[in-house]
Figure 1 (cartoon, one colour):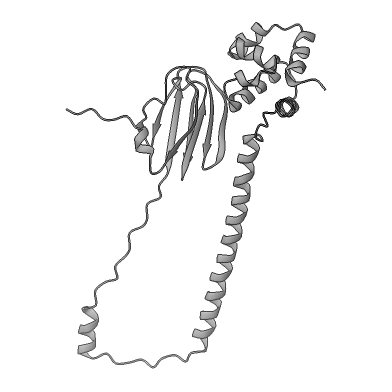
Figure 2 (cartoon, rainbow, N blue to C red):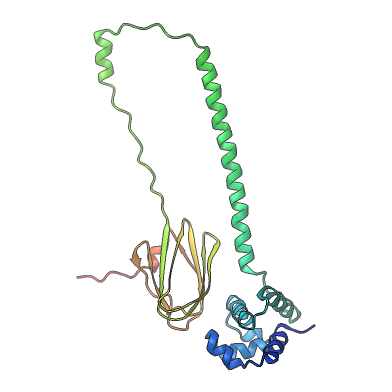
Amino acid sequence: MASVGQELKKEREIKGISLKEIADYTKINLRFLQDLENDNFEFMPGKFLTRSIIRSYANYLELDEKEILKLYLQTAQEQGQAPEELVVDEARTEPKEKHKRNFSFALVAILLIVMLIVFFWVILKKEPPEAPSIQTEETFVQEENVPPPVLEPLVEERSLDLALTFQQETWIQIYADGEIKLDTLMQPGESFLVKAYESIRINTGNAGGFSYTINGESGKPLGRRGDVIKDTLITLDNYKEYLQQELGP
């Protein structure tokens, strides 16, 4: 069976397309495309960017990217690299199971509340009405002195609002609370907004290609132009570490 690199090279040559033409169109480094066709995955820029490069290559040749990714996994396993399963599939499956559990818990809680309401309604209905009592002046004065109930303040909902603006072409993946929200090549002038209630994870192949704000405050650069970063984790507890420091007077 042909490897993923052999299959891509064969389809490219059948259609009479050069590697440089693909590199110019997709903005992917020509060396990465050559390593891909030679199945030299150890020289590729990380597994998550390798999959993005394979998708772009397959789409340019109008091939089924899912089949090409399966062939990539088989080829890498034959080389003894044993890559992990596709991150996108795992990220989409976990939130679904979490939503199902949350829905079940909510349904049980609603049923318990309804049962309690019915129980107390039946008890109160059976009790005889109390005879009206004549309030004395002393009783009236005591009721006036009863302090009003203290209302507890509402707990403010905390969240992370991340807004990105891209100045250069940038490969990027963004996860919000474990669910993938973005996995593509962004172009200059494009922007993206995502909200999370626990954490945001960022993988990118061009750390200096974009600017961002967190909850309306400017963030400091994650790296320089062309830097590849993985697993940048922003949480409710540490997000201020990613904000730009205000200059003193």
